[in-house]
Amino acid sequence: MPDALKRRIGPGLLTAYGIGIMVGAGIYVLTGAAAGEAGMWAPVAFLLAALVAVPTALSFSELAARIPEAAGDSSYVEVGLEAHWLAVGVGMVNVVAGTVAAAAVLRGGVGYLTSILDIPFALAVIGLGVALTAVAIIGVLESLAFAAILTVIEVIGLVLVIWAGSVATPVADWGLPLTTPEWNGVAAATLFAVFAFIGFDDMVNMAEEVRAPAHNMPRAILYALGITAILYALVSLAAVRSVPREVLAISERPLALVWEAGTGTSPVFLSAIAVAAALNGVLAQIVMASRVLFGLGRRSPAFALFYRAHPRFGTPVLASALIGVVVIASALTLPVAVLAEVTTLALLIVFAIVNAALIGLKRRQPDVGFSVGAWVPWAGVILSLGCFAAAIAGRLT
Image (cartoon, rainbow, N blue to C red; front, side):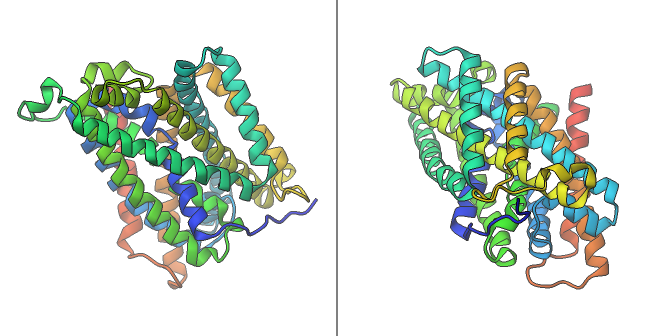
């Protein structure tokens, strides 16, 4: 079988993929968890998460322009830090994180689905997981075209949530003077919020299937992150304005509560949109994780089995199937909050290492094409490790 992926993705589809994977990564599910930790300060947690993400997104953008390969993070570490063992480790963390993230989103999406249809939870998880894995195998263009349609649907849903929250009767806490935030709670909420920004790091793993990646990849990453950050800030503000903190904290469908508070009507259609968002997030993560395995197969004999693309579909079939099976198994056994927290902690360490790789690369090679200031990867290292430390400290106190 051929060992090359097909370059079929343009900048528009890539940007939509990034928005879809970020929006599908948790805003429909984790808004309540963030509000439960930070209360009225939940929007601040999302803004802090965006600030953590920006320098790292810029670093990823330059690295993607310099080294347009699948298994992006792993490739960056191997070239930038010249440490093969660390590169393989980072790649495996990415595979695990992407798989766990997909499981978290699948579990959350099924929570919305079972509020619409009387269907057993396990059956829904297995059915959707198998279907999405099949879509990922059929072809990347087909996968991303399907994901782009879902992205439009889920963004419309978020805009409607923002509107509903703005017209709802404010909760009692909304009119009270803001007190000093509970920083442990804000730190914990920021950890959940960082999970909701997962996606820009996944985009780079599509580099071998993007046309003119050195030109298109950096722009698509920054466009996707900017659009998503604006949506998240407004959605979290709408949620804490319209639904009490303690209610949001225990809900598996928090944005449906915002719709009910603002309109007094059934949130069935919004729950359907949330399911679409989950499908998008799961599909994107399966596509990403399978590409990382494909890229690891090129660089490490231990993973050579996965360095195969189907002659007709042009996709890594074995890697996609394996990821799909593990996603389904994880979604059936682990709660959303635990899945999200584990994923985010792992990725914060990866972000710090990848930023360090760019620091090393800049010292040895001159800037070419898209480049960022020398301070950017340093900021990425500090913010990623700082967020990790704050999250751990919040759990220990």
